Image (cartoon, rainbow, N blue to C red; front, side, top):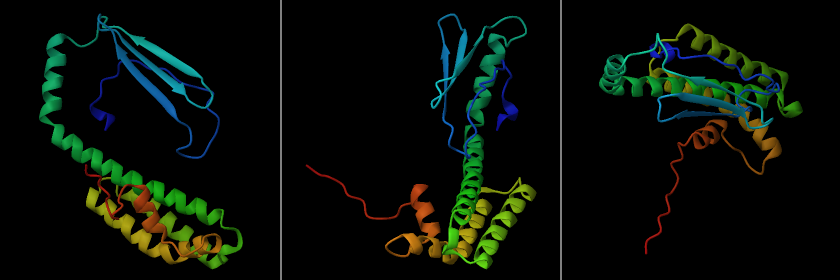
Length: 191
């Protein structure tokens, strides 16, 4: 989705401690002052390290007409951009699910047989290969692939959860709830 962006400047935030995917949290702040100067700051919430850049509208930057044209284009392509965001989100859900399943299997200890571990890890690797080979897939294809993977890994993942939980849980249902797909009852207070 960055292909249509305009490069304004570059800076790096270094010294971020190695951590699993999704663990580091970086706050990025954009602030434009009255003179049209853009200030961008990135801060690692764990270490407190930060870096920033100041971008002025010097020569070689966009003219007022170019900016107006770009704003009009952005409005015109809003629905296409939203479709692209949904597609990227669906792809990210599969990737997150695969990595969480792989982590759960690797941390399962003796709750799973080696055959079960190999089976789930093979499904995960196959899914990653599918993602690599289907970069232009549509949102519905990604959703179908996620549901298929959840269905296939569910019985094996249940073994992990029943070994340490009070009752059987479906790994796929648990993930859908975390992702906001909870279809349970809604409680509404009325005065």
